[in-house]
Image (cartoon, rainbow, N blue to C red; front, top):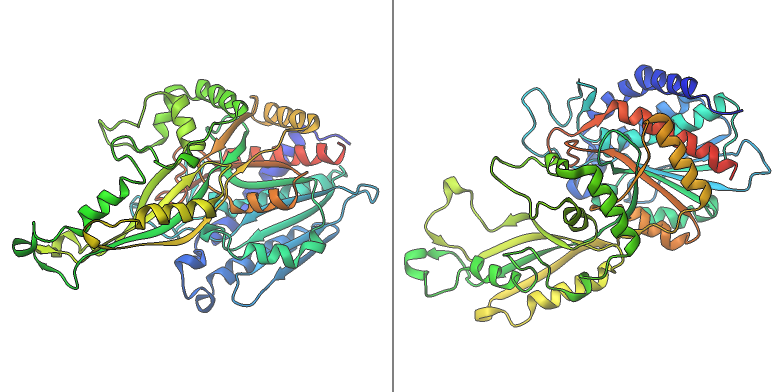
Length: 473
């Protein structure tokens, strides 16, 4: 049988409206942040609550040929594992599908009528933490499988992995992949629904992901704070020393990263895709960022901005310590300044070697004999997609044109999905479909995060279409 467009759209729409959206609203209410943001995650039980909510829905869906288990390892977050038999035993192919349930912390700045744990539906958007990143994934994945089964359309064996610590760097995932290795087998095709989209008008395929290197940098000169009138000009400010040291890493005037290994040549195929994407975006690229009036981006060239966002390194200062709040800050020369640094690195660079290089650069020859310490906090390697087979390219084209009415777009993403590098290393012959719903203003990790409901329904249809084509490839 063939997928009938209207039938599939009606099936997906009905399941989302009657079952998935209400369940996602329940999910949003659970503050199940990643363990790196909740030291008492086991005692609090929020991750377990989210896992049980998901499992209850999965069992009610009635997927045929499915074996489901909640995998557990001591002191590690639980993982939902599903093994769905192929509809035809002669089909020896395996598809691995991935999503995660954990969330980022609350963040401030939510609109007065919204909140991280308060589901609000407004203008075709479901607001609340975690729905778009990445609670929807398991619902879309299993809806696609159910849609095929309900129409007697063949699908390959499907292995579904839903983890609970992606937002903290997927630290538990390698241990589960090792534990489940024999049950997973060797996937030919991998689907990940934890990425972004440049607009809500067509299917967006992620072709690369940047990696990350995270650590803290502290500079200390005094045993205790002293009066700035007494010490200013005599003892160097810890913040000035910190600024001086950071110049070794980043040119503060341009934002350029001063490590040669991070300024590599970008593959020509990705340059071509960036040019095509820039034509689609045009000046609209700037509109997705909540700039203050009069503020500009680092350049007004969309092509260069896309490369900056997806292939070039960048440094962000995401946390501080040693600084009192402004309202209680006295005229004191503080003893210590500390920043948490988050560096995005190109897809083809090893994060461990860069972390070691960053530490050597920052700690070498400290000014005034200051106590300078860089403490690595982890990192993830990026990912670059392998060449695309003919069937996959055709399936993407067909599905995007059929359900969105436009051709698909191929673009790198600036964030990290640690799972992808892990799987690419383990299954080098597999093809990847990485996509998602994090489009303009959806604001994952920030205030007013939302799931664009018309887009997620169309994306679900596209995944269904591609799974059907894969089974016949």
